[in-house]
Amino acid sequence: MAADNLKVLNALDVAKTQWYHFTAIIIAGMGFFTDAYDLFCISLVTKMLGRIYYHVDGSKKPGSLPPNVSAAVNGVALCGTLAGQLFFGWLGDKMGRKRVYGVTLMLMAVCSLASGLSFGSEPKSVMATLCFFRFWLGFGIGGDYPLSATIMSEYANKKTRGAFIAAVFAMQGFGILAGGIFAMIISAAFNAKFEAPAYEVDPIASTAPQADYIWRIILMAGALPALLTYYWRLKMPETARYTALVAKNMKQAAADMSKVLQVDIEAEQQKVESAVEEKKSFGLFSKEFLRRHGLHLLGTTTTWFLLDIAFYSQNLFQKDIFSAIGWIPPAKTMNAIEEVFRIARAQTLIALCSTVPGYWFTVALIDVIGRFAIQLMGFFFMTVFMFALAFPYNHWTHKDNRIGFVVMYSLTFFFANFGPNATTFVVPAEIFPARLRSTCHGISAASGKLGAIVGAFGFLYLAQNQDKAKADAGYPAGIGVKNSLIVLGVINLLGLLFTFLVPESKGKSLEEMSGENEDTE
Image (cartoon, rainbow, N blue to C red; front, side):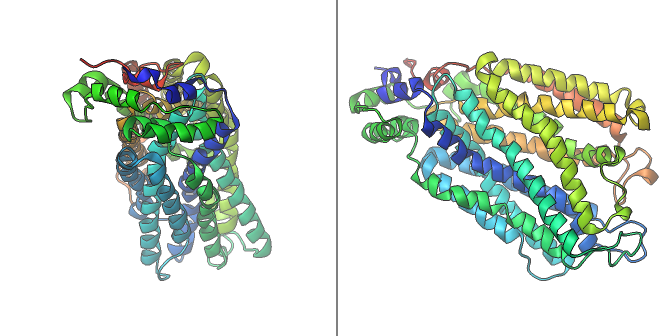
């Protein structure tokens, strides 16, 4: 008897789209909402931290974070996320998705609140506590990746599974918007109440003492969405696939899903026992896993790694682009609070125009044209646009051509989101066996975060001017923006090639994809 006739799993596969599917999307998606909010907010706040804590008397420009502090503040959450993905991914397969799920959310809420508090008022101690809590915040966020994807894929039906997992991921878009809008409201309110002159008029008075509250409020607000969904997470039953195929408790699985699906499902204890006996369950490091899923894991890890290098390097060009098109005037012409408002407004506009639509295009089309086609097309267009930005780079830097540059740049990231950014998250949750699903998703996601660290920091140094005198303060000479863009184009091309290792999972059941209902000899 193979696992393909288990009624519970079959009932889930063919279930009509119901209300519980949408509640699951929101409960699982809130982690990503918080994730995007937190990772996004720090970029709004770093400029202000520089002005408050690293002001240099007599300098023509406002204070800014030294390169090593800036790298730590921005990158420590990414390092935490990488560790969290591996640890909670493994734990989700060991202890069950639900038991670990509340822990990650609590960790995110507590660390969001704590990152707005600091021990002492010296720049060093403020940055140290901020980095410490942002690491653990990242750790909680990391746990959310494998768990949310696995829970959603195990709850969904065959027909719309891709769209549901992608919708969980697309909540990131709303997190980015919420971050930008909240920062705009707070900074506008403070700016109206505590007026301050521009930096060039009065360097010291341009940073109102109340500015120190702004960055703390913005960071701490990240705890709200997490706390709001905590109760609902605890009430969610364990997924039937985990209960039946991993914990081997058929009765419980049938009872849980009868409640959720509101139909009667009878338990079939014998079947699952015989099905599992046959499985001779192979582990992650076994030859059997290598034979069946080795190339799949290579495909999901490499494509996510390569995509995130390109995706996270966008932060490098953002500030130049905004300044170039005049959305953000030179820093010295603004006060500290106004600067936060301007940056938040610019990033919110970019999110509205390219980031958010890209995610929802994926949700709408992933179960129509399939994961493989979307990923291939996304990498293809990202490669084309990166090269189109790189080769005539000098042409784009002229004043008249700036709008063209922004359009091309937005299209690159539209195709990242309507492309590999969404599919690399969906596929690992569908193609591995239930007892290793969360672990393999965690490994793939951690590989992506490694790419993010390379993208965010490697390119920070690479993109510096080739002439050391023209590089940013404190940085060595690099290869220049033009050459960096060419490197990114090549990276996207490699992503396109590695996509061929990843199987298409559209319209198939999870057991069919993972080979769990093949009789092993």
